[in-house]
Image (cartoon, rainbow, N blue to C red):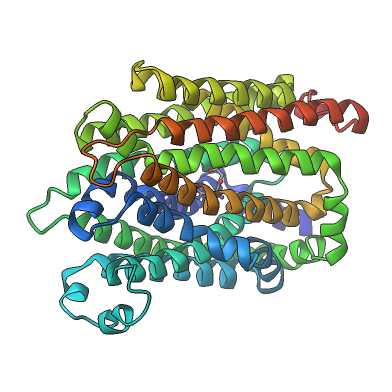
Length: 454
Ligand SMILES: N[C@@H](Cc1c[nH]cn1)C(=O)NCC(=O)O
């Protein structure tokens, strides 16, 4: 009787569970769209508001402050286990939407013409413009919501796909994220040319995140219906319950430490680079904003194709630790080539796309081999918080290096030292990847083995 009921639950319908992935995939794509939407606008922000490279780097990095200094990704995971998917998801997607709207408001004419908060933002830290301060506040709130909403979406995928096409669903989830980035790099440069003003690019991104909140509400209806059918939420809450000892166990696991440090260094050499990449191409190759945005978007478009392919390879043939080493080597070679040669950025971005697929496709499933399933939420939350340390520090450092290695009113910016910094991060990441492979021989987690053999 019960069995018949379970077989007929919503998650047993292929169409329904992939429709759920489509809904939460939209939320994720909007998240990544907003994260990247201002990257092609660096030179516009300098022209309109006098942003320096350090200001821009600070703006990019403020996203990570709640996740690094308030451990929001870890706390969000605990809140998720306590309050459940619907309430936690709604709360954090709402933070994301509110933060996105505040960011757009900070750049708007209404605000600049003595709108709400302008006088207050002008009353302290005179070294920072009131526009920058309001936009920083907005991105801070956006970051507070965005990282935890990724953790919520991961749990949603487990809820609907566990025991079904889980790995493939995770691959498709990453493809949605990359689609958001791809669209941001191509649409923002078009929207700044709009008749209604360049800020349309930011408003569009903010309303997309607001739309994501509405889409999440639709998802919640299905989630509620599924819970009524199988009472699954109670089951998940008991298996995923958080204990402080979970964190100490993770911190004494050498393989976990190496993979977390690789996550920190690898992503610090990719996401902050991506945030500056459009401006880098614009300056180094003397391209238009549109063209340089398009080149940046070749990285996410490559990963949309390669990540599921490498995921399939890891599932079937293993070699995850080796693939992380190959990805790290490619990353270093590409960044050094960017620094010291004039080779086509189109080709290099496609090659970088290989690295940006090899490492994520093998890193995230490997964690599941080295950590108990009941600790996987804490593990991912901890990795995200550590990773955000890099996403916080390196955009600022990139801006500081740029400002200090270029004369004040330089016509074009020289990115050589900034690229050397990113290559250096890649080299440190390579060391962690090598240590991880060596440690695997001792710990026996089987990172080099196919998925189903462990
Ligand atoms: N923690 C996220 C960071 C991010 C970047 N853009 C929006 N969020 C992350 O690293 N996700 C994993 C990935 O491979 O995208």
